[in-house]
Image (cartoon, rainbow, N blue to C red):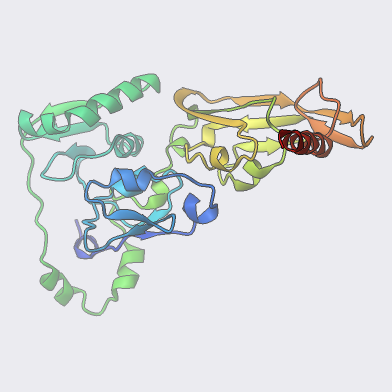
Length: 308
C-alpha cells in the first residue's frame, strides 16, 4: 500500500443522509431500513425523516448497506483484502449485501487465522452462499490460515509526509481500493441476469396515474401506448411505489429469480358516460376514472344522507 493510500485510510468520513432518501422525496414513504439496521440507534426519525446522531454513530456502515436507494453517503469501513482474499480481523461482521458485492468485485475466498474467527461470520456466510446458489454462482471458499499484518502509518507521520496536500483533494483522488461508497450498494447492477424483487400490479385497482413511473429512479415502470411494462430487475425494494400508489395497486416481493419484463395490455376505450377516450388495464371497463369517481362520490354522499 502506498503512502497516499495510507493517508486516505487515516482520514475520518462523516456520514450524511442525501435528499434522494425516499422519506425526503415523498411524504408517503414508510421506509425505516436505516433506522432498523443501526444497533446503536444512531439513526432516528425526526419529523418523519431520518437523521444521524453523530454522538452515537461509529460509522460501521450498516445503514449504507441497508438503504435501498443509496441515500446515505460515506465511506464503508475498511476490509482487509490480501491477494483477492477477504481476511477476517476484529472488524464488524459484514452484511450479506456487502459480501454479494465483494464477490462481484472478485473476492471469492474468505480467510480466518482461526476457526473461531470464521465461526463469528458463520450466519452471513451461510446466507450469502445460499443466495449465490440461487444466483447460479459458486459459493465463497473458506480457508483457515495465517496472514501477514499490514503496517499502517500514524496520522501524525502521514501528515508530515503529505502536509502540502489538502484532505479534500486526497479523498477525491485516491479512495481506498476495497472500500464502498453508497453508489456501490445497488445489487441489480452487479447481477444483471437476475432480479432481487418481483413487482406485480393489481389490474382491478390500477388507474394508470403514472405516479409509480414518475417516482421510481430505477425506471421499473414504463407506461407505453399499448403496454404497461414492469422491469423488476432494477428494483431495490425501496417500496416507494407501494407507499405512494393512490389505489394501493402495487405489490413488491423480495424474491430472487431470472430477470424478466412483464407486459400488461393497455386498452383504449370510450367512456359510456362522458364519451371521452381513455386508457385502462381492464378490457371490461365502460367508464373512465373521472366518471367512476364521481359516481362513487355520489353514492357515498347519498348513503351518508340516508344514514341520518
